[in-house]
Structures are given as C-alpha cells and as structure tokens.
Length: 173
Image 1: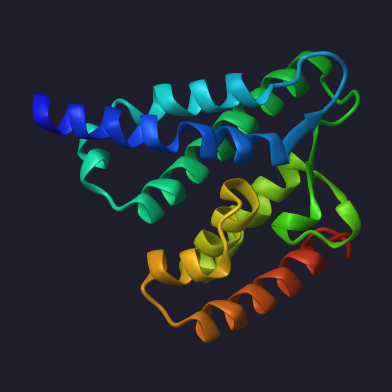
Image 2 (image 1 turned 90 degrees about the vertical axis):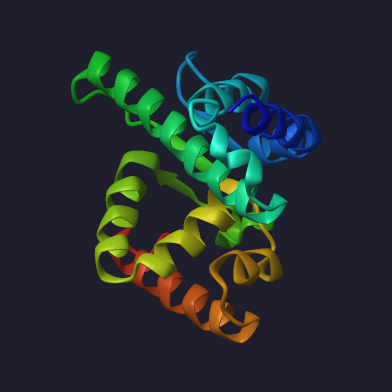
C-alpha cells in the first residue's frame, strides 16, 4: 500500500507541470469564481490521490485519469456557481485550438458534460477520447495508445464524436 502511494506521488511529481499546462488550456469564464490552473490541478489531485493504485498506470493512462478528474472539478464548480445563480448567467469553459475546438468556441460546460454523458452511453470509447482531448489535452497518438486502438481508429472516432457533439451543442463545436 505504501509502495503504491509512493509510486502515485512520484508519477504526480513528474506529471505536475504537464498537468498545469493542460489545466491552463481549459479555463472557465464567469464572474469571479474561476479556477486557476494550480487550483484545478490540486483539486483534481485530491480526487485522484484517494486511489493509490493509479501509481501503477503508465504516464499516458495517468493523463487520461487526470483529464477525467479535471472534468469533474470543473463541472462541480460550474454546478455550484449555477446553483447560486438559479438560472442566471451560465458557466462556460473555453477550449483553445490545441484541444480541437473550432475557432476557440465557448461551450456551456454543463451542457457539454451532459452531452458527453449521453455520448458515453452510446459510445464509451468516443466519450473517453473527447474527454482526453478536451480536458487532458492529449495528442491523438496518446489517446489511441491509452484506448488501445490504432491512431486511424482514434481519428475516425474523433471525427464522429465531434460531429455528434456539434449537433448536440447546436453546431458550436
């Protein structure tokens, strides 16, 4: 158990700067209560540290798990802000071009989260791919490796998932 925790701590130390870089790419827009990259990484780490078995994952798989944790932190923060507003201004997340969003489009984070959940019911692999690209900033090669599919398959899934999400999000993606 202590060995697993030590391995997880070592992996986090190695990945910390990369996670901060990824967290800077996903930034919330709203009035005031935003998560800066350091807070986002630390909140995600708190969630991940409860599972020391993550220390045995490869770096690529660890990044996918980190992407999921960052998504959860952002969605929870958006839900808290939205609950306080009760129908007031929505919480948004901006995806820069490096993550594959066209023209730096802004998507309502909660709508995106619901759409990703629906996509996961239809195609778990496509949803994992989108989550890894949007929230983890992973390259297609890394995502393909982590999903154990060819890069060509990952590209096809990416195109299909983006098209489906674009329809769900009103053509904004």
